[in-house]
Length: 358
Ligand code: GDD
Ligand code: MN
Image (cartoon, rainbow, N blue to C red; front, side):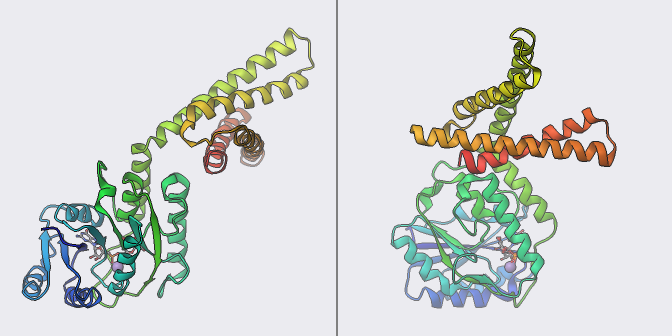
């Protein structure tokens, strides 16, 4: 029989936290119908025996993975054992206070299908974090917002504490890399209504964090993997293709107007540049970002105006790189210009993606 709530708890060497966790969860959920599934990656520290003992008194069981390691993949494996009408994910080390669970449940009862325990909404926070860790965390969130549009508007897409309705995972293929299981679900799953519930990420009292520098690299790989799966890399390639077509338009027109229409080359250049901006805009609107444009002439005109401004910015980026690499670093100006074009392409893409076709 399905339970009301399944809690999936990734754990690696958390024996010293498990008993307190199980008791606090039980207390917080008092007479609710729930199950607690600890997914342990063969810790060999007595967690298995301890959970077996606790299972005599509480609805808790353990799934031990003998040949795999990894937080997010442990959670995905845990999902296959969860039968609840709602599924929650939380850490085993009590940095996610179980007392917040009722508020997450309430959010689902009020109609959300994803409720996130959030450090970055009013009332939430992090206890005892160094400035560096704060900056890293904010930076990671910024990257997610920049590259993965479905995380935009969510203040804490990297949280490891959340609750959702299982049907948001229907048809979703979960392949997370590293730690950020929530980000995977937000992008690969289909939540319709997400709300954030504040909580304070408290300091760890027992055991130690498994977070290593390699997880920062995993995080970047995870973003790239989600981008690829969502077709965002293809989109970037299309944008580059359109940009190359713009170069042809620009050069062709410059030559034609100067040689055959007899215009002064600077006049031809002005006309050519703007013409290539127009063709680039139209191609991007129909070919690169067809899924990201609102209908209506007003929206169309606004996108066009923004695209022009972004292109102007791209020109400044190109010229700045060109000048710096040539006059300061001493590269040949044609080589510098290649770097300038690359930098301007990245600039144009990101700002247009973020602002023009938002
Ligand atoms: N099964 C399993 N396998 N569990 C793991 C593994 C693993 O390889 N690595 C870590 N865990 C478990 C830990 O035992 C703990 O219960 C939880 O995952 C979080 O691991 P910590 O090592 O305590 O990570 P953290 O506190 O630095 O990170 C937490 O906060 C981040 C926000 O800053 C996690 O909740 C992250 O998901 C979250 O993004
Ligand atoms: Mn922790």
